[in-house]
Amino acid sequence: MLSKRIIPCLDVRDGKLTKGIKFEGNVDIGDPVDIAAWYYEEGADELVFYDITASSERRDIMIETVRKVAEKIFIPFSVGGGIRTIEDMRLVLLAGAEKVSVNSGAVRNPEIIALGSQAFGSQCIVLGMDVKKVTPSDTIPSGYEVVVDGGRTDMGLDALAWAKQGERLGAGEICLNSIDADGTKEGYELTLNTLISSNVNIPVIASGGAGTPEHIFEVLVGDKADAALIASMTHYGNYTIKDIKEYLHKKGVRVRMNW
Amino acid sequence: MNLTKRQCIRFSRIVYQGCGINLHEGKQQLLQAIIPFSFGSASILNALQKVNSISGVRRHRVEKYFRKGQRKWAGYIKVKLVEPRASAIFLISTNTLSPAYMLNNSRDVNSSLLTKIDHEYKKIPNLQINKGVMIAIIDYKAGNLTSVQRALWFLGMECVVTHDYSRIMSAERIVFPGVGAAGSAMADLRAMDLDKAIIEAFHVGKPILGICLGTQVIMEASEENDTKCLGVIKGQTKRFPEVFTDHNGHRLKVPHMGWNRVSFKRRHPLLDGIGPENEFYFVHSYYPEPSDPAKVLGQTDYGIVFPSVLVSGNLVATQFHPEKSGQPGLRILANFCKWSGKDHVE
Image (cartoon, rainbow over all chains, first blue to last red; front, side, top):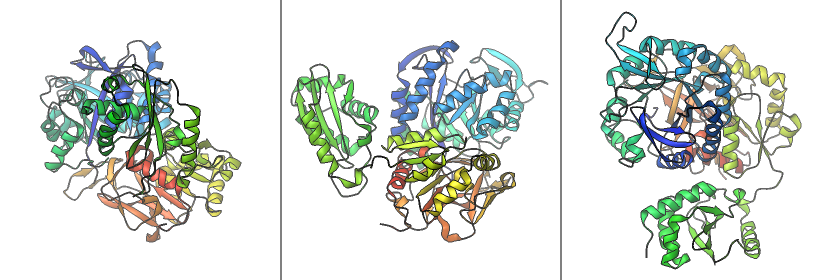
């Protein structure tokens, strides 16, 4: 049977690695190519790069990073952040990424999901969603609202409806980030993950809140998520991928133990 | 005097980045023993923390040397320290790492030394890559070609991405990859006459490796867009059921995306060094089902047990992506590059 995936997420700005806590106060902690090769050796199942470079003129730095990463690692990786057009997608995929992730760009222009999946196949289109909890209302019946621009702008869009629409448009996977849980290290938003995962038929990657291997276990057991995104818990050496996988393996979660 | 773990890790990372050689734990132990011995002095040892370049690496020499039980080396790395100025060369094989020569206070590897190493290198027949022996990666606009190419480069192979008939027919072996839909893939293949080229290459006995969509369109027909395919292997490409569950009743999603195992029905040169514990990266909604069960070399369990590795004479085909499956995947690609095209264990 399919193994659950452990996916380190690397935030990149101007070609350097950062890790944001609640999207603010980011500090540089190293070379992304370096760290990608390291995670590949360490047994990561996949990698996610999120480009938070502010100016679009500097995008070529990210493309160069993607190219270097692709020469060194032989597992899938996705690149997101600032993807707004088919041309943006093409550049990233040609540079060697397996998947491209759209977030704000897709909320503002949903058609990009359909165009991307027609041009490159739905397996390489990841719909990234930043979601926050709100009081359920007529516009947001699920009680989870989609936000964009790193959590700064509310879109008046229901998370469940958006996930279903994304699937219909041709997204191959959903990366579901709870901005309430992000950076807290207190565990994933389990209710949100259950809600989305049980209502779409494409894989869901849980994101935001991982602090211990137990948190990862909680979200991967049952049908809540197909993969877990992690960042600070391994970036700062508190845990290794191996620690996490051994824990999950002992608890009976199927993970890739040989690499 | 010993290297600290930190120094070892740092060193391994630099070596890996410099030349793609993986100094796994066993080799790190050797490193522990050898580095102080080669460099000899504490000052140089301390300087290891500042190693910032590895040169003298020739990519085509870095091919992994897989034959078990032999301790011949498969490549070399030269480590250069900037301050104090010193260099050392290490020879590397799958189970050893030995200091070959140490050059203190020298800026570059001296040329007679390189000649000597070249000479040694040529004594190892399995590692020789004949010039002009080319792998043709079939280019029919389906994505994912660059990752296959990068993986083959990493293994030190020469390859071209091409849709040119004569280049395909003059290549020693052929990789037929692909991501996308069967209907448009077949239309593109036909428009460029590549369908004929692949069938012809199969009949003249060139080793062919199909990957993912390449594997699916090798069959006679695909349920995807009701497409008539190449028919190199008899049988159909089928879709996973719309709604299905695993053995514990959990709903299974389509596409089948992620890492899964393969159980192999028998031995084959492609599978040298591959075991049932290895996992491979899959992403697909369709799978091939040959009419003749003997063509199935490996099967994978995803709610249903489906054929994930096929073989037919000089053709092997995987539903997973070896170029995205880490070390076991690279191993399969390397095995393919050495394979004669004969379906028996050599």
